[in-house]
Image (cartoon, rainbow, N blue to C red; front, side, top):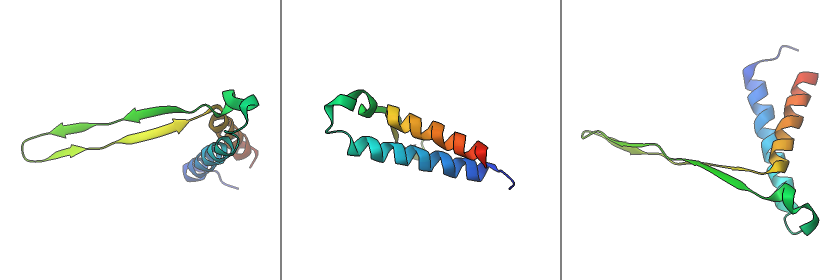
Length: 80
């Protein structure tokens, strides 16, 4: 099977989402709190150039389980 960037990106997004869903499901469990603690990364570029202006906002939430999901996705992609 030929590997391409689109498939890798799909695997990464699915791994990130799976890890985030597992982290959300395990949030009530105090024993694994270190795995489910969420760190938010924000980026908000904006400009006002007299004739037009823009204001974008991106927010990424990452937990240790999300990172584990991304690593598992990369491992699965390489096994293809």
